[in-house]
Amino acid sequence: MKSIYLFPNKLKIPALVIFIISLFLIILHYSDITTEINTTVFVFASDTMAFPKGWGIYFGFDKQDIYNEILDCSFFISGIILAFSKEKIEDEMITSIRLKSLVYTTYFIFSLLILGEIFIYGLPFLNVIMGFLYFFVILANLFYYTKLFIYKKQFSYENED
Image (cartoon, rainbow, N blue to C red; front, side):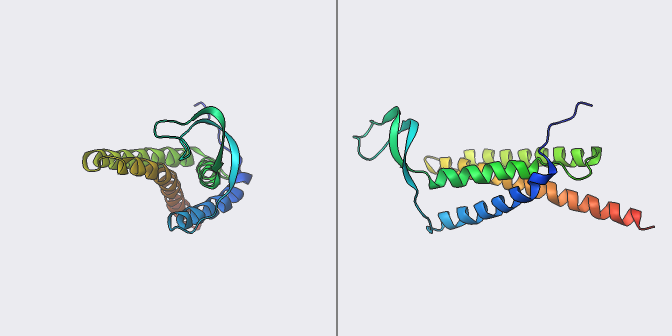
């Protein structure tokens, strides 16, 4: 069987710390407790309030608040590293658990997406889609580590005899 490429196990703890801090800051951000990091950045496309409607900047520099981008990138990167880091003992069962958790997460998220497509219309649907990106990372980690915990508990009882 061809091996899948995973991150080293030593990245798991730093990724967990960054993931928890990012999740906490995202919750604060959506509770209107936020900060701003305004700087000039290169943009592919941007619509700003300084331009008339329909105008924007394409492939240029613009002053933007990048706090949300930093927060989102740290959340997604740390969540992916956390979900795809090797365990100390990586065997076929752990690989199977990782695969099953991704499959269950995909089924669940796309089921919710279909329901959202049916019942949510207009601009709020974009917020729902963005929420699914966060939810996917959280659920993938939650399903994986829950199943891994159950597997390790069962395995530890077998070794006690």
